[in-house]
Image (cartoon, rainbow, N blue to C red; front, side):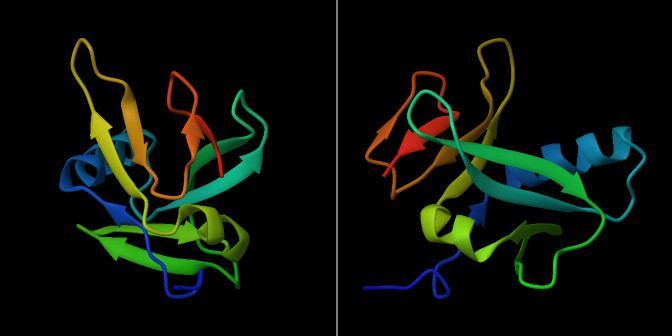
Length: 114
């Protein structure tokens, strides 16, 4: 059994490119993406994403495709193994989470239960 400290999160190249584009549009040259879990949503837990300038002292820093994710330990427990992707276009959903820890998800994919 792996522990949260051994777990990681993966970002697809498509998601990283979109993050860079969004950050540039916001005027952020140096940024990280805070990825966390909060109570709420129709399935019990909700995914949260926010651009931030720097990590917190206790964040795990994950870097893929030139993008840094900042994840607190509690959120990492629920997010370990997750793949963050991006789906654009006319039928695209935006950022998509493939979370192996989720037992159920809501229809829109923004909340889950474990």
